[in-house]
Image (cartoon, rainbow, N blue to C red; front, side):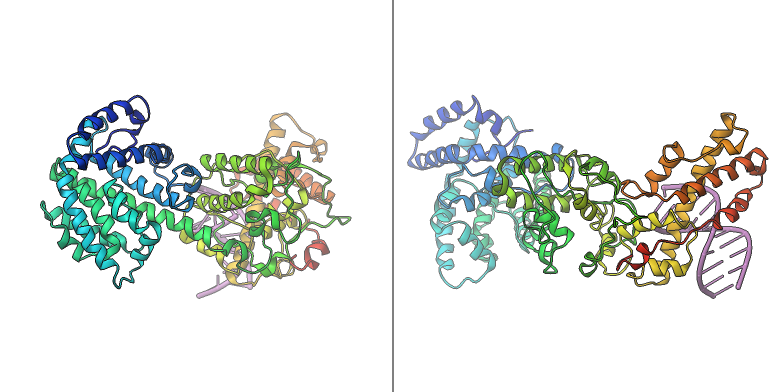
Length: 592
DNA sequence: ATGTAGCCTG
DNA sequence: CAGGCTACAT
């Protein structure tokens, strides 16, 4: 992988340039400098770009242009101002990002338009050959700048003028052959038009082209003309391919930037409701309204880890704001006891929701963000917030590998935060739209249903409505709840059958010797499934039911009843009579 | 026809 | 956990 830089428009690699190859470049340039005054100007620009830009461009290319690292994924959020803070353009740091973008595009184009090994001398010669065309361009530029000073309300022009002061635009910018800027809305079309013109006209007239474009495209035109001039050394199919690739890349990058921009600039995730939300906690850890979210920089860093469930839960929606306060929180009642766990591992807590967001790079980025928090504290919180929100966005379209982070957190905090209100689906953004609805079951409802299963395996529709009265019951919702308990039962009976057969294999003949205690492997399996966080005191009655069920299975299997396809139904009939009443805590809580 | 339970599968 | 499917009950 070669990284182009400004000084080598035809593809001299930045790697080589940044090392020992820089001297030959300069030597050749000095030699040619004596040949004309034009060349002197060129040399100044080359040195200017060398000292101020190249270092940044190299890092830019390494970080952002390496497709092998991107692996085809959407480019990650960039912080050009940080990366390019040393560029030193007179526009200041706020423009360094623009310089980076320009340089990035330039690097892409140049990297593809020439062989990586092309020597700087060739580049300088080519630039020298282009000097005539450049002079012509300068004249054109002057004419067009005169037009610019008139009425020009185009968005592109204002942006360009803002980005690049007129002097820079008319002088250094063009001559330095830093031709392009990032695509804005509708500019792909301009590029396409430009591209078509370049394709159809080998000896294009810049004025003709410019007359069809607004003034904001002048610099683009200059740059693309340079590309076109360089393309004169290539075959037409190669140019077509090049143009197609450039346009493809720019389009995809523009989309990516738009997504980043939306989630950076839109306060949707932070202040959409005007109240503190779980999303607030994720994105504004230092300013959580409830004060539950504290960031300490000592040993016990309390950091919100967004609980992202990527498993299929197509009907599980993010809870609306007005229900946030109604969150099902386990109360320390005689029957529902929050286990005394002053500190729990995130690894454990995040397992609660399974399949957390965890793209490898995302994890690395999160680690970096966490380290920033621990190192510098509030100063970097803003950056962390931005980074975090962006990370959440990226995780929407990324992999679902397990997420592991061993940071100690406040269990009460996790009780709120790790309830997966924020569901991020990895497969389908269209599917995700469901989670924006204000109706439907949330993952906290799911957790609650699992806890209810400890009391009732066959809840009636009445019980369901009492326990989930915060949900607008529709046929769909009802079916989903029924399906949930059906799945719970399925798992329950599968475990029972498995352990029953295992007991028989081990030679258990007396069913009375079969017991299900809290330390039994069977109970652990069940508890892991229904009470993964282990923050719920499972009622003894459930242990009794499990024990009875296990014995029923052992008896049935030992009698060979499992030959009958419907042999389990008899057991089901027995178990369904063992349901208990669901505690009042499940019903009386506002969301219970 | 509709609703529910259970089985199978991804 | 959800979807598809079948069987069964109402």
